[in-house]
Image (cartoon, rainbow, N blue to C red; front, side, top):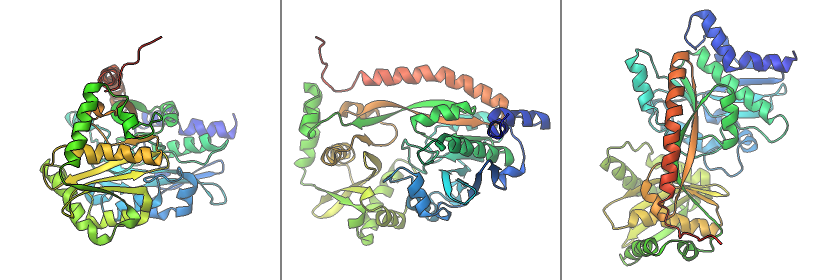
Length: 423
């Protein structure tokens, strides 16, 4: 057996189970690998306690170019301001893979979680099941973007023949973190499609959910997009947009690098008041929004509605080179159809102007279907350390998957697009 094969055999989930059985533990192990770097072949994978401890150049080399969330600035700001800090149940433990020369070859964003707020993997019932069985579910590990249910790569590696080997090393190191710290689980939120099978090969379970994404199918402008709707839905969208246009409100589109820090307290108040209205916790602060705006520049897109010059509603989005991500909404009062205008239609208009291919407006929201957002199945991956719980959750996810796929298909039947007759 070659050295590389020994390496993979040592670090696969099956080997972790064998070690657990030998120690009398149920799927979790204790070992020094969680507290020191894991060195195999020419790779060393080690944890760091903050995104800012990884050089910006390493993030730029390994993360997708222009990504608004997978970068040092976004994660560092959330960690420093507390939204991804211990006060909100997050503790950074990012993994970085380096070669023998110290060159960064891979990054895995990783957090120890004390709760499930802001990770969007919908595992509240899993935590309840653990409690009923007298087992601790928290702390757990999460690879994902704090407070951000956006899809994309999580196992960051440069393109090339070594990319898969690096990703396997990152997965193996994450599993060693679970074992060494006797954690309940490791979850990978909304990974890229090509990562799902790799994670599955290490024994991670796969859960499915549905988001609603807008896709640019070659529309020239909003009128072209609306022309694909059936007559009834087209009239309703036009009526919603007309109500806002005739309300006297003005709408402006701003970028982060054009925002004055002094503007953020008033804009933040709109966001925080709306969260409070629905009993939710507004994790972001005015200072964090100001820092994100300054750091991300044109990667932050802000839609602001004003009445007589004063801001009355806000929709904060972020963008990559091909995708717009809708994130935070807030308003001072109930303006008819303004939510649809600011959170959906303005974003679609923006995508069409900027030639972006996709608009991900956030989690949930069946009302998006009638406005042209297509049901999209998204996946999360889960390593469950306890062998019995892993078996039970595997059965649960197997039963759940057909229902979720059927729901996505049913939701798609309500899309507003005109039916095209066959030849």
